[in-house]
Amino acid sequence: MKSDAPLTDEQQREIKKLIHSAAQNNRILCSGALAIAKSLGIPSREVGRIANELDIKISKCQLGCF
Picture (spheres, helix red, strand yellow):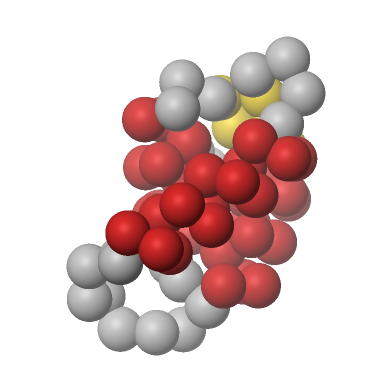
């Protein structure tokens, strides 16, 4: 994973796009959120933070992270 440096605006836009693509009924599966984080090489907490900003809930959490 990359460092804990702040995400760029471009990275945040990409995460938002991917979350919206994976979400159904304002929910995204934990496995989907983790896959987004892994594909972008970012901490999963950043995906969770942005999902919260978008008012999209993460469901069926596998690790208790969200």
